[in-house]
Image (cartoon, rainbow, N blue to C red):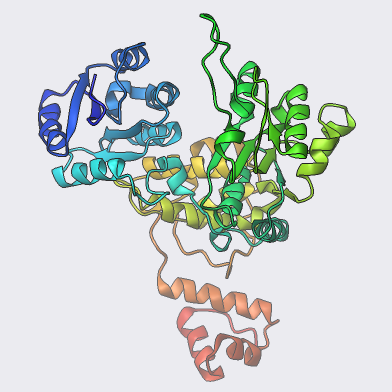
Amino acid sequence: MAGSDTRLLMLIDEDAPQISAISPVAAHEGFEILTAKTYAAALEMLGAEDGPEVDILLFDGEVAADNAGRFIQQVHELQPDCTILVIGTRNAPEIVFNAMKGGANDYLVKPIRSGRLTTALRNSSLVALPRDELLPLSEKLVSILEFGGMVGSEAQFRIALAKAAAASRGNGHVLVEGESGTGKATLMKAIQHTSARAKGPTEMLECAVQRHDMLEGLIFGRESAGTPHDLERQEGVLARCDGGTVMIGSIDALPRELQDSLDAALETGIVRPVGAAHGFKIDVRILASSRVPLEDMVEEGLFSASLYEKLSLTRIVMPALRDRSGDIPALTRFFLAAFAEVEGMKHHSIADSGLSLLEAFDWPGNVRQLQNVLFRACINEQREALTDHSFPHLSALLGDTDRGESRARGLGVLLYKEDGNLRTLAEIEADVIRIAIGQYDGKMSEVARRLGIGRSTLYRKLQELGIDNPG
């Protein structure tokens, strides 16, 4: 095992030449290198009682194949502070997707350039690195921590943002409700990031993924009784975030007895760890999210009325994507631009047939599902423009459903042909003129004025473009 001042890099790879290329670069950056040939062997070493504490884990995505995402999650369960770097080829898009979903911090494309590897290793090791630099890829793609950068113009969404912006200027607890995938965690992070407590300790605790018997210690802490079979002392998240913010995800999954304990802690400002004789003062702001309306749970006796009252002084409801379908074009453009920033990814645009398909779908998984569907399409589509053929699963689900191709979108003009190539400027211009003629009931003087051209120029264009003259 490495000494206390030694940085340890675990390399999981079967390719001897690649190992030979990586090892001297890592050694030059001050890493001791530990190798494993399979991810199963790596997990065994990481989970051993006297196993190594790894700073960086670098693995070839092909070693884990379809299990890359699950493997990364298992590593983080064993060693939460370990930085994950994944190696892959440009021709293995599923590895990128699985790595992103699993929580990889960076992705290196074969053949790995020594300069690129050096940068990745240095970024992963810098103590003073900017706070967002080492977010997992999945969070980097949608890391919108300022309200002005959050995408959407539909009324319900803008109301939610306005309430969140106001809440960020205060110090009270906040409750964010909405279906899974609507962006509740992103909104809570934006509130925290722009609040007076932004520089204070902050942690996220997701109740839905924790065992109920573990949640009490995770939240309030636990004192050891000193007996051989007793659990080790554990500091709770409320204590660690004293003076800062605790974000509690899926608080609707918090057991009823722990709701009462949390309510008492917020009421008195005193936290008492499990097994402790005395409590201690804390100053913590709670940002909580719920997948269901908590008021309904209160009425059914499933949630503490007192805790709900404390949390819901500021209550924000994130609308489902099906209720803000007008934001799908803007969200799509945002995600496509974000994906283009990932190494090994190409820039993609989207044809009208593809956008019509996205707008016709109901999106039960909301914005998160839209992001995932677009990402899969980008890593599988070789053409520059995504069309309806880029989303075969959606096409199969929708079948012959009306996809709204005739609806106006922006100017209502098709920019792309079905083969993904741009239409000619003349074709686009003709469509614009036809739309203007219909919009202004064939009043050619008004059409010319709205298009910013002279009446004689308009008639000339009608003749050149083969458009029937209504007047």
